[in-house]
Image (cartoon, rainbow, N blue to C red; front, side, top):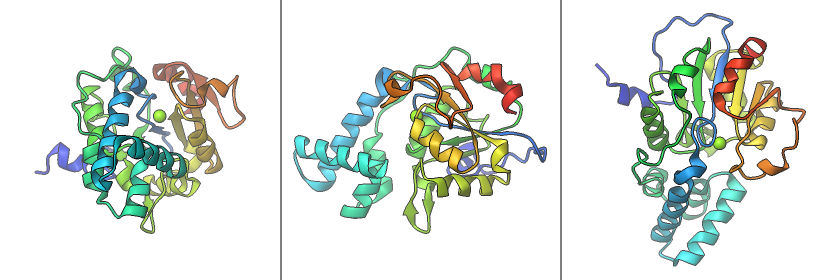
Length: 244
Ligand SMILES: [Mg+2]
């Protein structure tokens, strides 16, 4: 029998649960949505990225730092620039850039797995982060069995090209693969750009405000592409009737 872990290595995980035809599908972002990545993890990712770029290109820290920032800004994920311009192996790069134990670093709402278990419908993770890292965080949060599918950066490709969030084409692709109507899906995210992309694909959107997220401070009140704005992800339960 295939282990849980092996199943999770695929973009889509079928638990063979009967899905009701019109049930809502909740698409969750990972970082600064399900857990507080700004607490300790972002600094590890930042250092890891610099080290991975430095080793791959044989350059110094300062140059590596500039390159990774530039690619992150331009492509939405550093690995995309590294593959495109330097032909690095994405899997090796992602391992190196996220090569730390998440256990002592994860901070999240107490009992988050029990709270989100009360949401009716299917749950899918969509993250621009690598799969091994996403799974490690989900396991630590005791949430990995809750998700029917995990879309990590490795899976966010269309016609051989990386299309991370906020790609509208990728959002449409995910909706099609999950076999639902776009208006029955809800993206729950801290990054406004990604919510904007989701809305353009016809999804509903929930903004989880996080002060550590870039540009979060500009989010005064609610943007037109945000259906609901919450301060912590479990507040989703308050709006489940309206959204589901
Ligand atoms: Mg996020």
